[in-house]
Image (cartoon, rainbow, N blue to C red; front, side, top):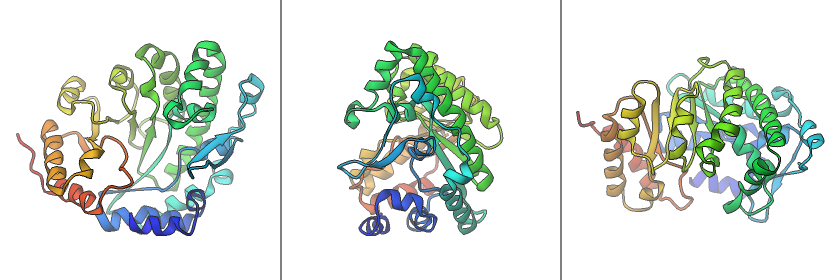
Length: 315
């Protein structure tokens, strides 16, 4: 977004996250320029790791990273169950400001990382393309230590998300971006129990909860049994088949390939029609299957939203 890029020329990514008025500007731009149906608080999933006691800074590419966790039970035990108002008050204030600005016309969505994904970032010692390697090594080398870490993340994240809901979030999305690195058996042993603990602490039913995992078609049976409202799936999953398999148990979110938005507005519009027609437009939140590429033309993002509002599902 042009406004975001202008702000980034003046402020670092973390400065934007930690300054509610600036985070508000970033969150409002897609609402105002694209006309999307929901406003998403601007923040980062690693904020929880910092609040738990790790160091959060930027790497050589300007991307956030967590440091300070040693692979010992003592180091994991030192991770805090923090007070969200004291440690992450800037996120809560950003949600409150966003709620005031959009009124009741649009939903406000808060978010956090699911425990497995945050653990991957806490443990990472490698570039992003192998970010989950250390966490996967630990599940073989010291499964008890990994489970201890996941448990502490789950409880702290639940506190954080309850505070987001109290600040005005109408729905919550859990990003389990790196869950696709696991087999179904590994997911059932490690990631799913921690996510379930988080959801139980959050009090399921208080607001809708969306669960996203990238490249995780093999995990759908485990994800579908969790008490979430919506499963968000990437472009590798067939929406129609998944909806028929799920029945009425969950809604779906997704799953247009973000690379379609690197083509032409006509290609974008056709991709939107295909996605909506797979589900008949029912029980389905139209969205991308992952985040926008940075060089996505603004007019293609606008074409996506325009098509979403105009398409008539095939019955």
